[in-house]
Length: 267
Image 1 (tube, rainbow, N blue to C red):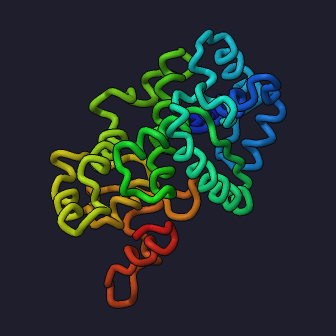
Image 2 (cartoon, rainbow, N blue to C red):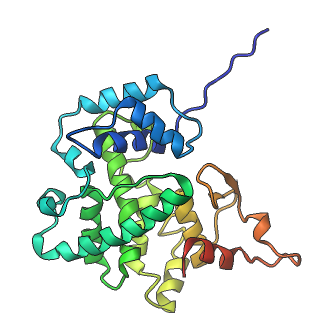
Image 3 (cartoon, one colour):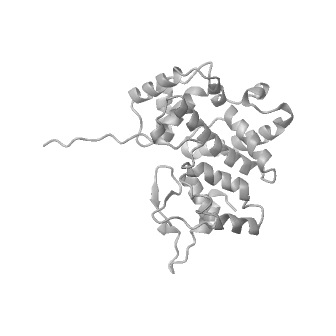
């Protein structure tokens, strides 16, 4: 009897990445082969077939929406496309600078090429308005994830991605967005009291996040993870049990919190 091999399903984030690469340069979009080459350099696992990329790109190209310009590369001269008023442009430029520094580091380590988009510029402005006490690096981090979730929501609305793969941006089941909202509401970075209030609100008022990077962040803040929580330490494709055994010392004391702070630049 011949065993039937089932192809592993592609991550919704890989499908999103394919769309991002297609949209970043509207006048000269990435070709199918160039997209395949880039996701291969980024070591996604499993890698998509050429036919899969072709289908995703075809569906995306059929979409008629002005919002597609949001995923184009940000240009200062076209600030209005991002929806940011000119008198707030300095906020975007400061975040753009932080983005360039982080992206350079990611490209050197992982081969991952990122682009500062109009969508990201818009979210940087929104996050700054909500939390002007944050340094621009932290504004960028929060804005980055809001922009990613916002992008996924549009791709689902356009029919490029399936709504079964991810809760809507506005769905109460989207734990990541509700977690981000909780961060902006409680501002746990502002004081020890605010941190205690935030931690005490998880998970009753604020759900524990699903995104691996924010699981790390929540854990570093002192939030107790739910049973069976997995998280991603150093490689987005390597998921291990929580807490990681290599971050425990011989006596069983949990050193992971301090190590994670160092590894992720938190705290």
